Structure formats: structure tokens, C-alpha cells
Length: 96
Image (cartoon, rainbow, N blue to C red; front, side, top):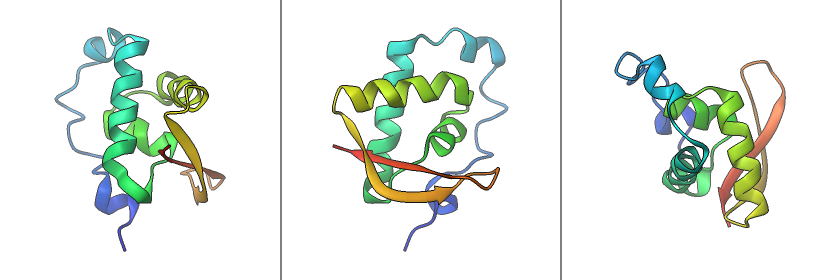
């Protein structure tokens, strides 16, 4: 069985993405990246925190995009929960 660490290399690409480049990404672009990341995670899914880490984009930019995608019916709550870094259980998103 895969784990989040298998699917998401949290350290890869951090140096390659500048703060200026991250700041210039607009909501529709981030929404597409979030959807692609959830798609790539397959049935294992991804939490908002995992998506943010994978994309090297701040959580505050990713979380609203997951809400938008959920309201659009493009992603859904898998019913599974995982612990985030602060120890709280959070939604695991999968494609609808």
C-alpha cells in the first residue's frame, strides 16, 4: 500500500520555485494544479496540506481551491481521514 511519503516528495523542487513565482500564480491556475495533484494521487487521495506541500504553494492559497473544486463537483471527500502535521485529522480528497 502506498503512503503519503511514497506519493509526495515534500522536499523536491523547493529551491526551484521562487517566492515571486508562487505569488504570481492566480486562482484558476492553482485550481488546475490542485485538481491535477488529486488526480495523480489516485484512490489514495490527498489532503489539502499534502497538496500544498507537493505544489510548494502555501496552504492559504490551496485550501480555498479545494473548497471551490468540491463545490464544482470535481473532487469529493473520500470518507478517509489522515493526520496532518499538527496531529489533527483532515479530509482526504479524491476525484468525484
